[in-house]
Image 1: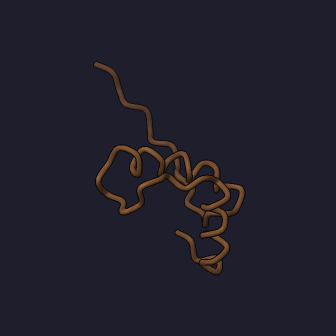
Image 2: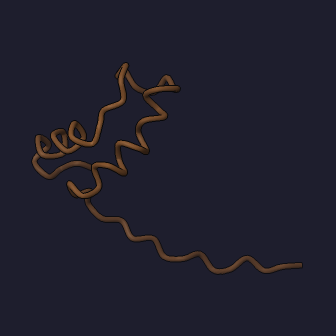
Image 3: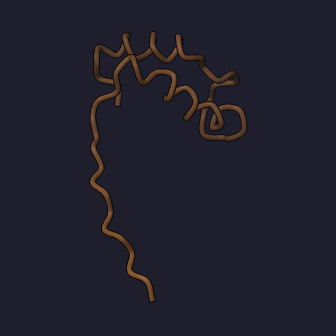
Length: 60
């Protein structure tokens, strides 16, 4: 019988413009192959960055 290792701590922080590329990649499959978004084309990194800037720093 094996013992599960202790879970590693998780750090939660506000998204920054440096995260835009990763956010775009995470979101892409939901736009292209899912039904959870009303978008027809996955936004690119620049679009995500623009949306983040427009949110006034309140991007989740």
